[in-house]
Length: 440
Ligand code: 5AD
Ligand code: SF4
Image (cartoon, rainbow, N blue to C red; front, side, top):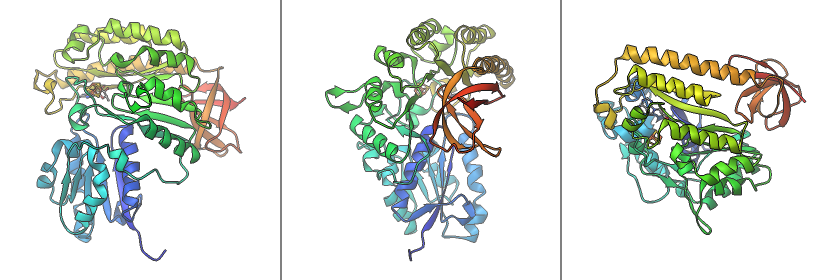
């Protein structure tokens, strides 16, 4: 090749959907002549794919941008782009506050990146935070034929109509929208050709999936069953879900579809009905516990994961203890927990706030309980046989690491095994954040 490729450095913050979006943006920009680099110093363009879900996300992005001042002064041709949910939430404010930014693009406008980048290369500033009518994925290039890692993400749904009182997603990602099943199936088949054996279906509210396909609207369960027909695809997962969209056919799929892995991330946020109501969650603690019972009836070995928020406005000690009670009643194999963080523009941000120190103290107690449950769930794996999809070489010589059906990190010493191999493993030891075992 005679023409020198321009270099693109992407930094991804936040959720798995941003990881997926970053890959797709890299592919779109590959068509505009960019190739990825790990080094910001070598880059012609730096792209920050940002997250706005918690904390002072915008402030972190501004301080990160500040660090590029020196680089930009040394190389005025360096272009700086901000994508993701901070871009959507802040819009042109970003360029006003940090003039070294050349391009601001919201998550629904990524298909317009090549055009926006062309404007930026011509010396203009470019901003696009529209929510267009068309599906951005229809206009992004097909996934590149590069050999993929054995486990891949695939976005099937975006946005959310639930409007939980703490959450920015309905504002930054927009209304709930599902991709057509035919496109998803084609993308999944292409991934399998590239060596992918496990696909995690992504969506902010993925179990609300309702893509327009053959015979009308497809549910997530129908999509999973169709994906399970793809030869060479061995494992299917999905994340993240809302309890109220856990339909009967999806619950049944957990019992019937062998490729659907026995792991479910089903956030409840709080165990107090009063707080759940103030959060606008649309369910009670009791209805959630009943739901979990029904899912476990379909798939008794299911490993459950969740999200919890402590210190939501008006949360009393009693409300908080109700959350601990719910955790004890349900039993989580793994979970994420956060201090409530007021997000500008959301209803709960306007309410009286709980002192930081109370939030911290509750988070410590909650995390101690969750850590206990996680350790117990891991210890219960010792002696059991699980299947492991190996994804990479481990730290020690001859070691390979991968994920079990239950999404536990597992490593074994087995020279000769390669990424993409799927093997039965007997678990021999539970370590702080992983399991070790031997090939059966
Ligand atoms: N403060 C704290 N946690 C939040 N989450 C979403 N918004 C907030 C907020 N404002 C958490 C929820 C959600 C997860 C992705 O992030 O638990 O399920
Ligand atoms: Fe946010 Fe999830 Fe609630 Fe939607 S369901 S508003 S994404 S927390």
